[in-house]
Structures are given as C-alpha cells and as structure tokens.
Image (cartoon, rainbow, N blue to C red; front, side):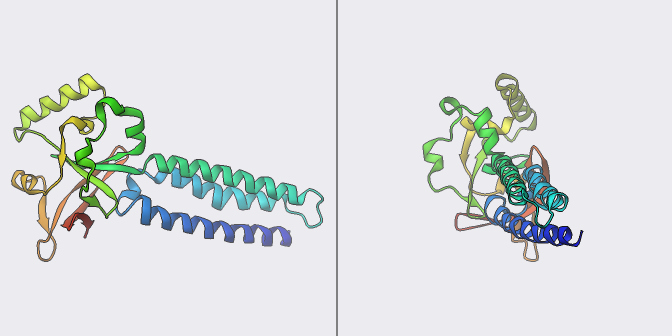
Length: 227
C-alpha cells in the first residue's frame, strides 16, 4: 500500500504542476481578469477533475511493484489524461473571447463558439475597416461598440426586432458595430460611473452567457485595462 501511495503522490505532484501551468496560461493569455469566470469554468473543471483526481486515483488502484503490465497500465492512464486534457482545453478554447462589444447594458463578451455557430461570414463578419487597429481589452481582445439609439423604447424595439428575425442575441448585430472610442454616452445615461481614487476609471458590467462581473476600466493608448 505504501508503494501505491508514493506512486499516486508522485502522479498528483506532476498533475499539480501541469494544472498550475495551464491555469497560469489561461489567466494570462486566454482569459484576462475578470473573464475567467465568464466562460472557462466548465472546461477548467474537466481539466482539474481528470488531472488532479481521476489520474492519481487510477494510479493508486493499479500500481503494484513488479506487476508485468504496470508500464502498459500507467501508459493507458497517461493517455486517458492527455485525451481528457485535450478535450477540456478544446472546450475552454471555444469559450475564449473573440471580441467584446459595448452596449447600453455594458460590455458583452462574444466567444469563439458564438462566432463559429451563430455568425455567418457572408452576413455577420466584422467589417475589414473595423478590424484594423481596434482598441483591445488587456491588449489582446478587440473591442467594438454597438450603435443604439439613446431612446430606451426605440432601442428595445430595435433589439427585439433583430432577435426575432435573426434568432440570436441583439449584441451580435454586427452590421451596427462601430469603432469603440469612449464611455461618454454611457456616463450621460448613468449606465456607467466614474470610480477610483482619482475617478480615473469607468465602472460598468462585463457580461457573457455564463455570468457577469463588475469592473472598473481605463483606456490608455489603444488598450482597455481593468484597474
């Protein structure tokens, strides 16, 4: 039993190292703060469950010093972990932000999955002129702005008509996208507020189909950052 515990502990240690590196990569590259909780959790749960629980547990069960099939058994466990890890990363990648779009409700995070499954290249691709040098969230994710009327009744009607005709969320109305410049019109409407010790950031909601988070944002040289 001691050998099994040692083998399982070594497996767990390696798994912790791999999981830690993956999480650092996800936070630093794919999901800048606070986007991690707005799309990646399901895939991360799969990765952690398989990497930190199932793998070491299987090693604990099958390990026996001198066992003829030990190398094959451990190889199969490693292969299963790699497959599950690949599936988890694929799931997570589908939820990575393709871009963000500012509306009267706040910033919507549009995932690669939404782009691939809901938007057709012919009718709903980002105009080429908008793709050139946009402001980027955390220096990585392009940011656009949905053109909406400031009349709340007319705005609601416009969005409802789009959703009824296109059967998808109103914030995917790519034909009404413009370059994002600032938050002034949201400040006038009271949707966003100035915060910070020097009132140097704009507080508003960041929204995805998986949840929402409040953030204080600041624009600096084509870069939108969380303060």
